[in-house]
Amino acid sequence: MSEYSLYGFSESGNSYKVALMLKLIGADWEPIFVDFGKGATREKQFRDTNVMGEVPVLVHHKSEGDFTLSQSGAILTYLAKRSGKFGGADEMEDLEILRWILFDNHKLTGYTASARFMRTFMGKADEPETKFMHARALSAFKVLDAHLDGRKWVVLDRPTIADISLCGYLFWPDHMGISWDQYPNIKSWLENIQAIEEWSPSEELLPSALAG
Ligand SMILES: N[C@@H](CCC(=O)N[C@@H](CS)C(=O)NCC(=O)O)C(=O)O
Image (cartoon, rainbow, N blue to C red; front, side):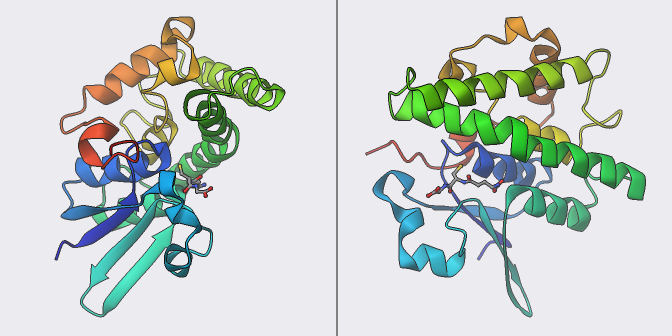
């Protein structure tokens, strides 16, 4: 059995954040496919694993028993602490990383994932709710683009779990109907992430909920 199991699917950028971290730290892990399209996150069996009914869920198979954790930000923090990679070097750095992960979860991924879902997977690009969420996502991109001006990475002079969290949905600009040419600092930062050795796109790390 692998050391870690990750519940998720490739269209889930939140699952991708964790899958990418596992890949980058060279972890021994395996994906467990959750068929979101068929309602698997709403089934009792999955709710018994995560009462929140969401992927990603990480299971760490330890000698003393399994440890199960959800919420990508918590999982990234756990993996950074265990591996000694992509975390801060002290409390202040850890807090700055946490600050950007919270911004990501609320303002950036929160709106991006919902707008993308409505637009690309539900075909409801013109609904007022989609337009609202799309506009909120664009505001978050503007904040991130301004912050990245003159920076290679979001928090430190090296990539951290803040970068891994924030990039989760951003390799699919076409799903949002945007081009990163409009946000040049995000564009070059995403290229920096792609240049990390061992970087892989979501589709290479997790099974698709659209296949079959
Ligand atoms: N804040 C959570 C968000 C997780 C989330 O929204 N997961 C979605 C897929 S990307 C999900 O499982 N949704 C299931 C549902 O709403 O039924 C995290 O970062 O892990």
